[in-house]
Amino acid sequence: MALTTESDFKQFYEISLQSDLKELEIRRLTVANRVRTLLIFELIIFIVIMIYAIWFRPEKETPMPGPDLGIIFWIIGSLVILGVIFVFITARISKKFRKLYKQNIIGKLITQISEDLTYFPEDKIEFNEFKNSRIYNQNIATYKGRDLVTGNLGKMNFRFSWLEVYARTMPDHRKKSQYHLLFRGIFFIADFRKTFSADAVIFPNVSKKFGLGLIGRLLQEAHLGSVVILDDPQFEKEYSVHSEQSENAKKLVTPGLRQWLIDFREKTKSQVFLSFTDTKMNMGVFLKRQLFEPPIFKKVDNYDYILENFRYLMLFHGLIEDMGKSI
Image (tube, rainbow, N blue to C red; front, top):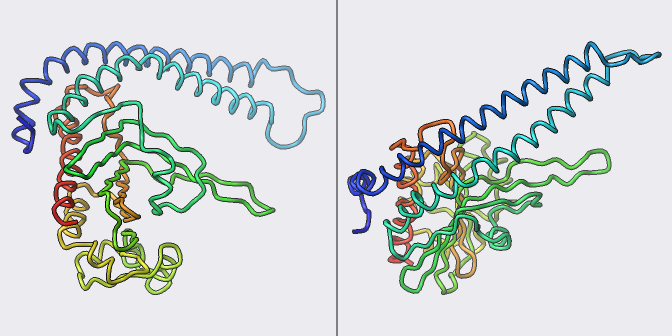
C-alpha cells in the first residue's frame, strides 16, 4: 500500500524501518566513535605544531616588524592540511554506513510512496539542465549533487536531486574573483513533453520583502524580465512572476500552483524558485538542512528526522499530481 498520509508513514516506520534502524544505530555509534577519535588525534597534532611554532622554532636573525609570519604560516598551513585529512578520512569511515542508510531507509521510503519512483543515491540533475532552467544566470564555479529520484506520471516524467552550487563573481582588473553559495537544496524538473505557451520565472519577491520599492523591482526586472501582474495580493506578497509573454504566463501560473507555492512556503519556511522553459517546469527549493543524509552524531532512528524526509517527498509528489491535472 502506497504511503499517502503521516499515519501511513508512522505505521510503515514501526513495521518496516525500525529493525533496520536499530542495526544502523550500532554502525552509527562505531562511525561516530572513530570520527571523534580522529578529531582528538588531530587536535593533539595541532597543539604539538603550535608549541613547536611558538616556542621551539628557530628564531630568525633579523625578524621583520609586525606579526610573526612564520607562526601564521604554521597555524594556517596545519589547519588546512589537518582539515583536508579529516574530511577525507571521515568520508572513508562513513561511506559504508551512508550507503546502507540510503539503501535500507531512503530507498525503501521512496519506493513505498510510489512504485513509479526510482532512486539513484550517487546521481544528480545534470549541469546543463540546471543552467537551462534560467533561474540562476551566473557563472558556476562548482557543481555537486546526489540522491537523484526519477518517476513518471502518465506522459510526464520528472526528477529531482540534492544540489550544492557555488557561483564565481568575475573580477575587474583590481579585484580577485570571489565565490558565493548560489544554491543548496532540492532541484526539481518535470518534463510535460509539450511546449509551454510562455517562458516564465517565479522568484521570491525581494523588492516587497525587504522594502526596496521601485529600485528593487527594476533590478529584478533587469535580471529576470518584465513583471506579470496577477491581481493576487497574497501570492504577490511572497513571489513575483516574470515573463515577456504576460497573458500566456498568467495561464501557466494557475490558482492551484499559486496556492501550492504559498502552502509550501508556510510549511517549510524555504525559499522557492520556479521557471517554465520549453517543455519543462524547473524548481529550486533552498534548504539549510540536508535531506536523505544519515546523522553521524545523533541517533539514526530519530522519528522526526525521517518524517521530515517523508514530508518533502510527499510535497513534491503532490505537486506533480496537481500540475499533471492543470497543465
